[in-house]
Image 1 (tube, rainbow, N blue to C red):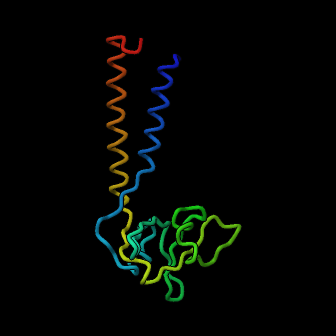
Image 2: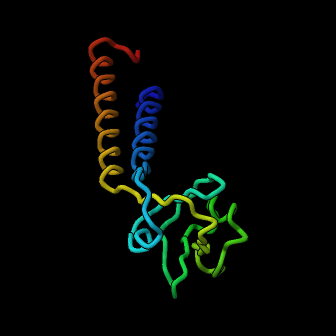
Image 3: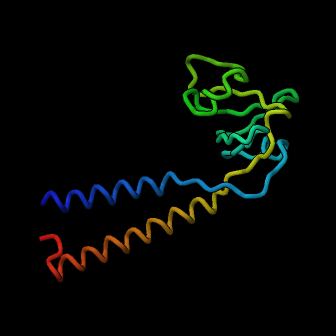
Length: 141
């Protein structure tokens, strides 16, 4: 395979991975109680207008915790709120207080999947068109 064709294939695969990791969150804010019952990812906006993405929100004995990866932006920025840091676990829990959380948005799994499918379809059309142009016109030399 020629180097130029290999570059285009590599580009295609990179874009494919990019669309697979795309997440869309609902624009409507929910209560922390609703977010704790939701099994998926959530995005919170703090009172200082910082935004953090959490794996989920848990409720234990009336207290709410956000679960994040240990090396995430949320874990680094909210270090003083971390509870239950276990060195063998890759997740930490962040104490979510009323003065910390302003808005909570749930991940829309349907929209995330739809966007990924549309992105992959458009990219496939683009690559297919480039392949047809290359075959018919000798575009890639």
